[in-house]
Image (cartoon, rainbow, N blue to C red; front, side, top):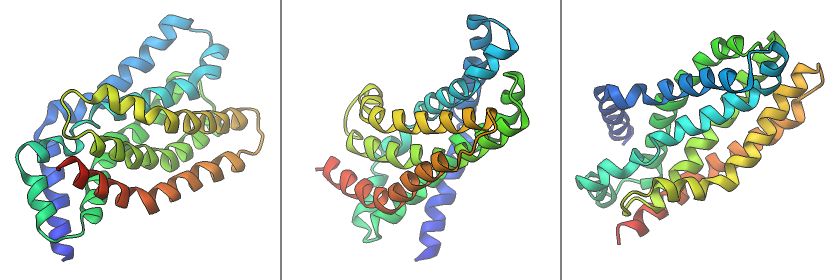
Length: 222
């Protein structure tokens, strides 16, 4: 059974790396957004440091949304999703595998680039550390909750705008707590409460999202 899940995971990763244009699209979008912000607000070091947490997090959220619509779309169109549903395998485990693929492809490169982007936006060491921790804790939540919205709209044409609207209520609290943690680090204040809230949100999503995704996929195919 585990080999079948490994096969699904390897297949998704192989397809992702074969589509190199879409693979690098989130990273390129992130770099463009972060590089344009200083041109719009001015190159002052204090100003850049103050807006840097929000800029990087907003860019990360928008970058992750770029590939979100295709999370299940291709499998839905070519019939693979229907075959997986009829295979008797637990669909929640397959959904979790696809979410893991999305996180590795869309958000892990962003986490690796974030120290460089933070340096570009005049972050100090304490802000770097807080930013990395918030991204590690928060980005899985984006993939998990985003997969639910994508599963609900998988049968619709051009559903990317609808997916964004469905995800907005979740993304706003995450953005608030994540940027608050980095700002607290900049003022040398403890930010463990914000991290605890983000971690709790992610744990709740990890426990419930795979089953919600599975149910949404079954509903969308009928």
